[in-house]
Length: 252
Length: 231
Image (cartoon, rainbow over all chains, first blue to last red):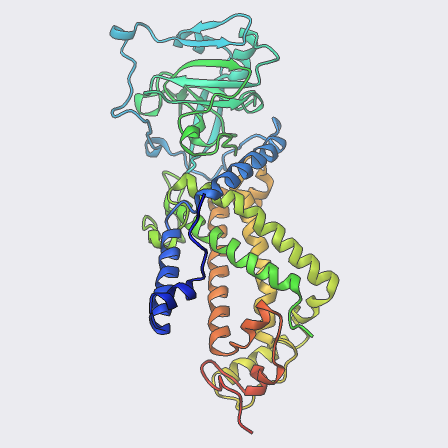
């Protein structure tokens, strides 16, 4: 394999017959272009491996920091967001479960469980109900307070008989192909809920009706709305935003 | 005798890279929500809410890219800072940086000199009183940035810390201020290097410094007496 001979820039400039001043102009221009190319860019491609490495190390630390005893308590002085609570979905229009097309909505709990479940909204509402006034931490940096009411995911795991090998849980939706998978420890946190009511009312379509997952120990994008299926798995299954470059763990 | 030990020189330049990337990626993260108010509330103390930072000043390309850089580079910043602080503690350089008795009086004298109220450069050691205060403040601001950063990274798992800072919204605001002060101090530092003591640039690269060209010897103010004083 033949390569062009390496030469210093100064050498090349001499060869090309450029005088020193012109060379300095060119060089400073190139340096400026490099700086500009670096700004508002994702940085050098070669760094992506290092960033992935850092993400894995951060995940290990975040897993150590996760405590089932550390509970989120929204500040008493914080206003409930109410109608200011942002609405978010990835489909083009607000996803709505059309019973005439898809039949009655059911939440399926399956995967590594002894007894898969298929629960209607009424079934969910009949299970032990728990409500918390919680902070919502969006990856974008905003927060909002809402009262979330539903069933602890740990309760559903107990009812379905999740097997010890289930180290991960995937939450799927009918919002296009949106899903996110979690580590089991975050999923079993006492504040990780299958939420069907917000601020005392059943969820509306803008906020993820009929049910969504919510936990303050995960950033907003990890909390799948328009929930259809909870699958216990032996390994992680990525996620909508995790596959697009956001960190998979997304812990708070 | 080198003016700066190799450890100080290396950590200085690692810090330049790490801090630049931390600030630029942090501004990109900030641009995803360039405001502080909790949804449904207003925030008292930020008049520029809703106005993003110019993209040219940011790094990371998009929110996820900026976050990945921010959460990787934070370790470089922290480890580098600890190496620096550990070194100057064990090696004694901290004595040149911790404010001495009379630092307020000395600082006032330096300001009077810079304002040409006083004609002769105040006596100083390695650094003048204003430099001492700046270089002493820098690690404190860095630590503030790290602590406030931890508080907004883990507001649930480290809730006691976040609450101590007034909750997530305020912790994010303090994080922004720590960044802002670090940037302001850095720019003042760079300005003073170029306009008062450009001879200190080799000192932070190779370690060599000509004492006969120190600002005190040249009686140098910003832009004044940049060249060697003719006797």
